[in-house]
Image (cartoon, rainbow, N blue to C red):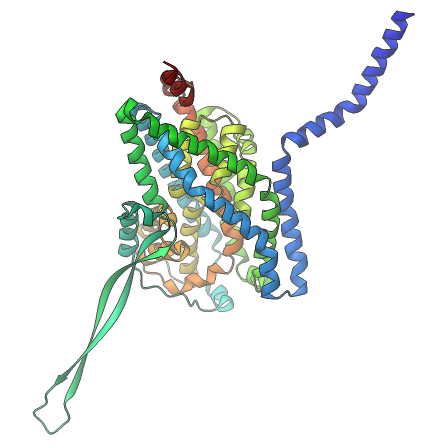
Length: 494
């Protein structure tokens, strides 16, 4: 009897498990990936809501109110970028011995240059093959109106100046940019004839350097890397200071976890507001549809072929599993359109989901989010050739090489130059003598393309961290896998 009852209970338990099992697995999956699901829903609902409300022709004030929750999210994320970069870079460099840090830096920079050049070359091949621009397109989209007095030389020199800021505190809120003023002087030339005296007007171009409200990320990175190297070389003398930055990094990441639960709500209204701000989306898309397809196709090929092939060839691991681990950062980047603002989320995805060594992420991600812009390089290679096609200008093979190289340089400097979209594109256009005014023609569709570029940039940074982690695994193991906090606790106990 007891045996029969036990058999019945066993059968009932199996029946319950068969019924509750799939539901329980689903609920555990939802609980484990709640933030990812909510973030995806936030973007999806934001897009649908934005397009559905366009027919209501809302006022600018109403759109501003709708965008307000998204504006708060951007403010919170940007608030954490500076303490995160400072703490992660200083600790990341300081806890590594010179040999390991040198190897990580060499691999990271090599990866950045390789993928950026490959992206620029891919963009050139696609735009030359598809030919999205022609005379008829120019007659439809009209003439450009953009103006710029900045030269390629000025932009490159501003990049170098910003790498070495003269005031570290100023670099946290401002960065420099060259501009020109024109002064005219008038002199009277005496005439010996009966005619009136002649006036000679001389116009002088005067060089000036001003500071704009925009964080000088490159300057801060330069200082933090040097600061971390000095801490590493000082050994035990600098342990207290290193411990301070380690605690700061931990506090910042805890704040990131709190903000992440607000992110889906903020992204929803951020995307909705941006869609509502576009004046004539349908007409603009029809005019520049083939150009948009060219850029998007290039970004997708770079993302799902170039980066995947590179990751698999080096690590022999499935790149799509890696992509899945950093999916939340990619979606957040699409919503915020800023790889720097998404940096806290990228740290969290790589360290918690993909288990990338924090010593690698602390060095690779801050630098990568500033100088590794694969999507931007591809965009800045496609756009100038598109403008050349609009103006019926044939480019030589040498000019294509110049465009690929300048697009690479321009993408590296994009984060350190104010009005980056305008100024960095000017570098590429002026390098081959194309009209700067036509930049305004492609800005009309930049809202959507910029978000896809940002997502690709984040994936490129993440793949780079994964590759560097794989290549430097032996060096990191030799140095020891224990956390630096435990080492300090042990030393203090002694």
